[in-house]
Length: 339
Image (cartoon, rainbow, N blue to C red):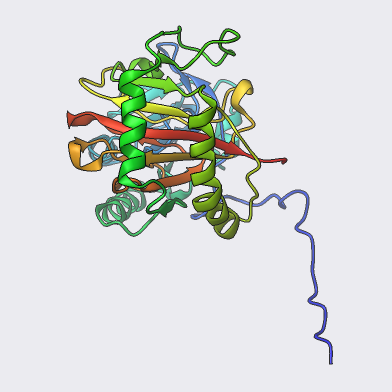
């Protein structure tokens, strides 16, 4: 006896227009602040933070307790934006942003009366309404982030490399590839061996990457990842890895510097092919700090043991944290396939 074929249906090509509700993903927008900064909730320096939007059509009166609300949101590292015409009573701790054609107000259903929208770090709407609803939403967000329950979709794989493997890679960083190239994603000169490059992402100055060009070393890493990582990605994410970028050994040491926020690995056209990032710690007992956090999901940090990997989608906002003592060595791989 054969099992009945399950019925299937396709989701509509467009979601039917309806008012936004708590739990919806907040519509994206782009506005320019008075100082010239582009405000885009998907930008790396804004993603992963609470956003409080105060819509004030026609310069209406600022709602009561708005200043206390803004203070609470900023204490969480959030941004508070007043969208609409300025008025005589000031901005109550909100950053004034013009919405000259009213498009952003229309996106969020703000019509003639003031309205407050709280957007959680994962871009889900946490509140729509008055200051009381917004304050309660901030308290819920803070409580969730205080405990490690909202895990990002990351994969932790132990024993990708043995301790001898890890020491081999650290020795390669120390003993080989002393040529430094300028930062960038371009192809290296033909025939060059292993080389190094400073990686000043958003101005940080604590990271140097060592590109592995030696065939023997690449084959050794390929063998480990094909046996111990690729099958786990296929099982957990239903994606077949068939390609990779050149392997790197990263070293983090000293003051971080630069802008303190995360980044995504596939936002530029030349790296849009990336599907997964893989980081394998090589000496976890020899440094402090240096975990990876995913601000859209929480403040917890992920730091595999020596030889262990953390694997995640290249689309996830992530932030390698400051190494507070020692040197962190890590094998870095960007993986993809045919789609």
